Every structure is written in C-alpha cells, then in structure tokens.
Length: 195
Image (cartoon, rainbow, N blue to C red; front, side):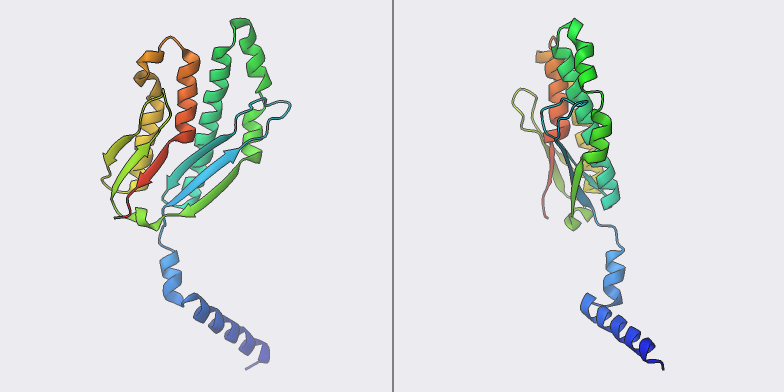
C-alpha cells in the first residue's frame, strides 16, 4: 500500500473517531428545525429609514428559516415605509417614498442573518406567539398540532397579516395601523415549551 494512501486512510479513520463515526453523519442528515433572525440598519442616501429592522422565522431547515426571515424583514420594511408615507401630508408622501426607494436593494444586499438549531421543535408541543407591543394587541396562545415550526409560523402570519382588522381603535389612523403591522413582523416571537 502506498504511503500516501495509508496516510489518507489514517486521517479518515481519525476523523470518524473524532466525529462519532458514521452514525453521527446519519443523524446530521435528519432535518433540524432552525430559528433565524434577520437584522438590518444602515440608513443611506437612497434609504432614509432610521429605525433598525429585525425579523425572525423558524423553518424545517436552516435554508427555509433563513429565506422566511429575509422575506419577513422585507415585509416589515415595506410596512414601515408605508407607515412613514401615510403619516406625511399628501403633498409629501411621494417625497417620503422617494427617500426610501433604495431600501429593498440595500436590505437584500446588507441584511445579516443569524441562525441556530432548535431540535426540540421536531415534536408537537404548546407554543405561543408573543407580541407585547402596547397599543397593537397581544400575543395569542395556541396548541400546536404537528410541527411547531409550521403551525407556529402560520399563527404568526395570521396575526401579522390580520393586524389591520384587529385594530378597530386605530381605524382612522392608517399610519398607526401600518406601524403596528411593521412592529408585528419585527417584534413577534414564537415561544415553544421544551416538553
């Protein structure tokens, strides 16, 4: 046997020993629900949003959670832009929207996404969507039937997209409604029990 071949086999054997062997490889192939948090804050010439933006999402895999967090960050940014425009006098709304015309591109290029696995979410459990923003409503508790990452994210989606209908006390204030919608996408948190 050639020395280089023996060295290669030794390195492979050492790697298997250190990583726990082939059984660990099979385990790592099992999907692990993952929570990702997307964050962006960098006001620039063509995106004058001063507020930092963040959004979280849970997915069956990291790629799912990462994509959903970025989608939600984009939705939050659009709602925040609409909130600013709705709060401006009619003659200034176009100016406000123009000042934020580059936000979509900037956010897509510059957002930072941090992810971490939550393997305990593989099993069905009780979860709660928490949204403790004064004046915008409260979180809704619900029992998960099936995958927490699927049911929980559907509940968050229902909460945030239905925000306008729930805020009857703000019906005459479109800026506040859009502001609450933006806050929902940014501040809502899916909390699941460990058992």
